[in-house]
Amino acid sequence: MEVDAPAGERVESTDAFAAPPLTRWKVAARLVIITGVFAPLLAVGVEGLARYMHMDARQGEPMTAPGAPKGYLSDYVRTPGVDYTPRKWKLDDDGFDDGFGHCDFHFHGKTFLAFGDSTTVWGTLPDGDNRDWISSWATLLKKDIPADWQVCTIAEVGYHPVDYLDMWRLLAGRLHPDAATVLLCENDLTGQPERIAANVGGEWTLFHSPEQMTEWADDPFPSLYEPSEAWRFMSWRIADHTGAKRMIHRDVPHRQASDALTTLEGEMDLKIYYLWPLTADSARNVHVDELQTAVGKPIVDVDLPAEKVPLQLQPGDTVHMNHIGHERFEAQVLRDTFGRAAPTPASTPAP
Image (cartoon, rainbow, N blue to C red; front, side, top):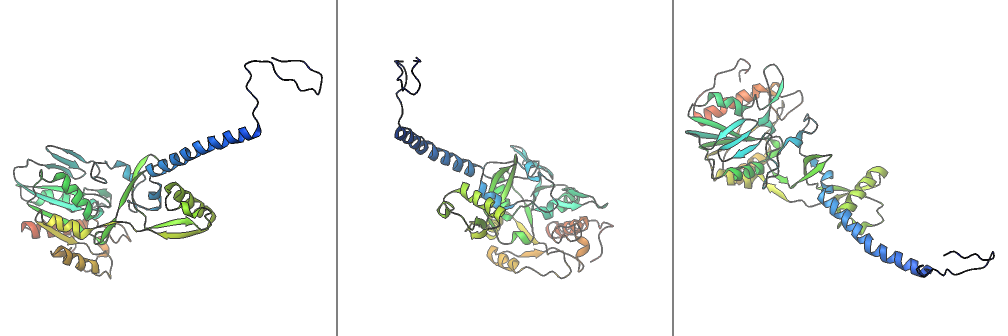
């Protein structure tokens, strides 16, 4: 209770329930204890959140390609055991569906299996409209193969031979292809770094694990960089803001195209094709011969005309074919696998 007293005199409270006065050292001691308990918990929480969000991935290369619309990767379906599946992917006991249509596990006939990446998915219609799937060589093949065959396609933007193997493992035992073809481009010839799926802005995005990372050159706590993903992210952002940066090399595991193709080739009748860069002076990549030796199987060049530039999907795109290129490759697959010629479209120039 309150007690009146002359000014300047100290009066003790007679309230029996009043807390005893705290000396400064007791207050300090309690603050130290609280800080010692909660600061490590906070640090652990921040680090756990950074790892859950895969902050390192943001310094890697996102698995998309020039011209892909914003949010493109958000349409990919995540499947246990696979980094990512093709858009529109649906798998059940009867077969699977994707952007190329339906594949029937119980088809009463023969099955041709096509593997590809963006060089298979992307194309143009004769009117020049860019369209996924529709003008692909794998789609064109459906109308020209014998009636007792079906075409099943596993292809998506950014795919690599290791993806074909992962997807095949989902289907093994349920699909029994009588023939198969894989179309390779420059990005498919060597290893692929491990990938990380991260949720960025509410959308799932796949990144190649970064082999070079940025560190804040004036980092006052360099010992935190290696063990803490949260601190690596902070160091990167501060380095970008201040300009005081240095690059750190990281050893990242790679999965090899040769291993994936060797496994696939051992489980099916697989033909492997290589698409040269669509430039006037392109040459066969040295890695093609190295891959061919490692797999122990010929890698066939896509049958291209001497003048390759008119086959570009868009001016300056040296990787992806327009409808003319897809028509040419479809005709090549028909000859090599089915022993028959495709109707020659008016849009296809003479060799």
